Amino acid sequence: MTIRRRSIARLLALGWLCVLAPAVSGQVPASNAPEPAVQHIGLTAGRSSVLSTDFEITRIAVTNPAVADATVVQPREILIDGKAAGTVSLIIWGADQRRQYDIVVDPGISPLEQRLRALFPGEEISVSANDEAIILSGRVSSNAVSLRSAEIAAATSAKARVVNLLQLPGGNENQQVLLQVRFAEVTHSAALELGASLFTSPTGLKNTLGRITTEQFAAPGFQNLEWTKADSSFGGDVTSAKGEFSLGDLLNLFVFSQKYDIGAMVRALQNKGMLQSLAEPNLIAYNGQPASFLAGGEIPIPVVQGGLGTNSVSVVYKEFGIRLNFTPTIAGDTIRLKVRPEVSSLDFNNAIVLSGFRIPALSTRRAETDVELRDGQSFAIAGLLDNLSQEARSAVPGLSKLPIIGHLFKSKATSASRTELMVLITPRLVRALDPDEVPPLPVMPKRFLQPGDSIGEQLQGGGGLVDAPPANQPAGEAKDDKKKKGGRQ
Image (cartoon, rainbow, N blue to C red; front, top):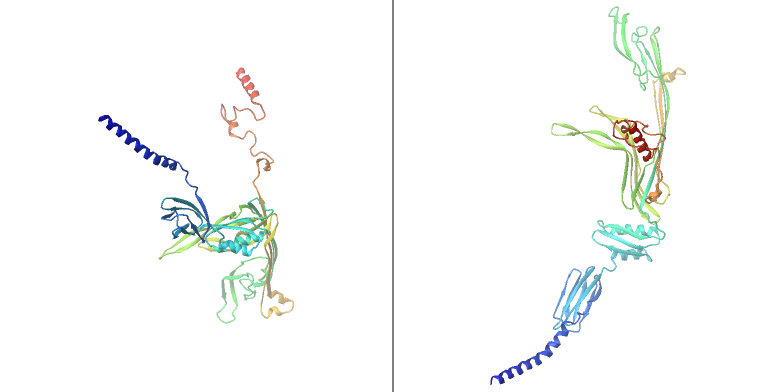
């Protein structure tokens, strides 16, 4: 009985194995089956597309709805909307299967690129933009198209920086600009002064003091006058007199007769002057980057600052000298420059005195403009021709109308100046020099320090250049000499 039960149990076990074997054999190949390839769906930002499936859709998921969004509109249809440039994943579930897609959203043609293609038909201009920069790339036929495209791109966004990568036929690869500026100034001046003053001595001429002048030039002045008369009646004789006169300017002719107590001062002066100034600042800048240069100094200027019942003086420094500011833009073989050269110097003729300090004025010549040149071309960006003439005349009424001697009662001062100024600029495209291309530097015609002046040669006993061989003696000969000296000692 027991044997029969065991055989029945074995038969039942074998039956269950036969039933389960097909199911297990059907599941094993399914686990090793390869996953279906991820399909790509191309889309343009701002456009939509419908995706159809061959099964009923139960659920969908999108990784980033800001780039692309999906909506189930039919049991087997999905509406996909492209919103921004990028790539997202779309996963679709059905009742018994799942599919995955990569949605690639292309930015498409931006409004700026459409506008540029409409304005410049036939030009290959591509625009890439983000929040910080607008990049122009492609090839254009002329420099004008490249510059105008960059100007239009800059006008569309006030915050974004424009990077112009448009290529021109035959463009130069150098991205550094050397700007040579030359200031040439010549000033001529001339002055003529003519006048006369007549005067008596402080004691007077026969008891009479007098001075005739037009007041255009300095004339003698009387001071500390004292006299005594014989009596106090009108017209009484002067018994004694004394006094002084001051002479502010003895130029040019001074004549005084002690015998006749009369004198004269004649102002006759003529001068001429000429000033020549030439400044040539040079500066290198990278494409699109500003550069500045200053060769000069700073002058301290005291500034009075008032408070509540108190005044304090602070010092502000003002720069002067030769200054150059410019920003180059390279477009093919053309260089566009925004340049601002300036030359200033101290002018003590127009100085002011403030709290005991003499503060000079600044004479400034400045130009600021935009120019467009090719490599090596020169252009005069500024010029000045200033002619100034002044004439002042003075005369004593009545006496100046007398014939011949009337000129003694007239005076005049004439001045004239002429200034010629020109500013020339020359841009050049430059590159760095290789080590074998570096030119030799200038050398001094004679040595800066004579032999024997160095400290090492003055040391005694083991330091500096004492133990070293001479410059024109090999090291081997120096050792032999040292041995010989050691042997003698």
